[in-house]
Length: 360
Image (cartoon, rainbow, N blue to C red; front, side, top):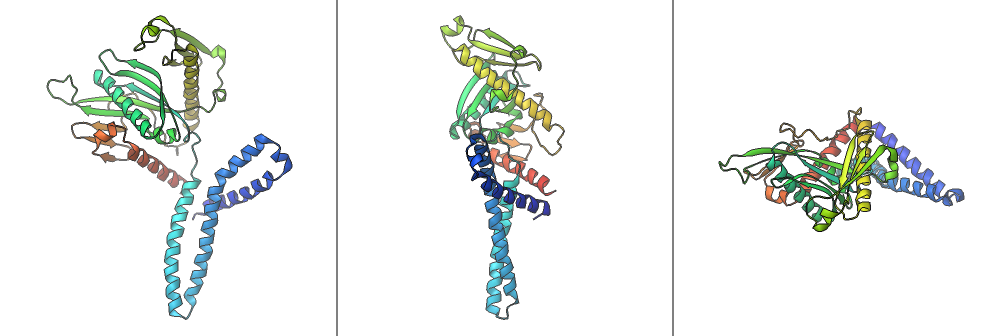
């Protein structure tokens, strides 16, 4: 294992001992905020320290087995050689586990996320695919026991959806969804195509982590313009008579969010403010990371056909993720929300890239 990693592990071990000593002090125990913070830090460190201790124990056993190779008894030497093979295998496994544990953690991974899908190039067919992708992610959410909370949906005139924004609530939503951001390309024969020609359309997907608290983002009232309007789409007489939909414009950035999902204007306003906070938080993080070359962040493109992260080819029943060159011939299952294998492969590829940075 690299010296830099060994030093980091030794420092974490030292820090865990320091925290244990601090937690038994009376003044710390009476300070709930500080006590909670230290406990959180310790719970993050302990899995690494325990694995590090296990690795050190195996190293001691390996040294003892090596010493036995000098024994004159050939039977003892043979047993020592067998033990060394087993210990080397265990050490290799535990070192790999330690490296994964040492990777930087994205605090947003465990929480909820906002899903935004917009039609790109392709007109009516792109709008239809927005609806298809929304169903795909809704089915995936169902498989993961997440709750889908629709915030805004703009139907297209000829069918399909121009834009949909929803919040996905549950465990590890952002962890599995964050690599879905980008341009998705669909190749298929539209129902309206009489000549049987394959059309290519694009849809953009953006995934934003939920801001922990709106108070994390500085939302001055003077920076906000809040407009009310009548919701569109399904909803009965209520939609036509009540200005319950909310549009909030963040004047300094020009960012606009809308919510018309709920009958309550107050609830729509709360949802819109939460979405705005998430968008501003994401913008802030992107600006911070823009100068860090080692961060491989997948951004939403313009929706042009040449920019793509994934292609859904219906005639061939094929889905291809171009970032990791993964191709699957199970398009029907994927469109029904079976994308866990793709998400898992993207997470693993990201971990490998981070490991390369850790070891360089």
